[in-house]
Length: 93
Image (cartoon, rainbow, N blue to C red; front, side):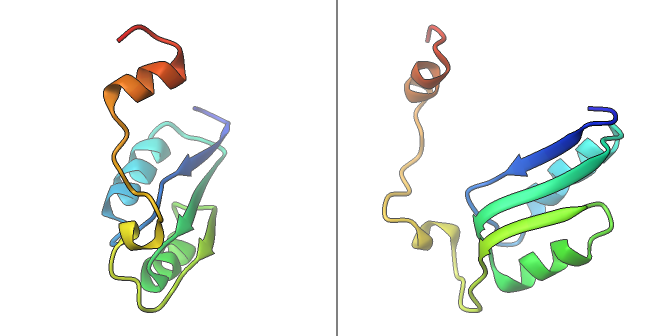
């Protein structure tokens, strides 16, 4: 990752703790830039990432004040099965 721009994508951020861990792990690999991209996040969490010096840019399409949970912002928030992942990646299960 050294010298590269890295985009970390998640389905949404509530507290942002998992994304923070990912950002910190990537920073140790010395990327040129770290961009966080999410379709939805709690407004306070989005604001925290905007102020975080470890994040070069955050793309947050929606940041509602009354957030509650990531899954509430999706029509279908079912978990992806291992078989579906293998099918999408074209690898044997």
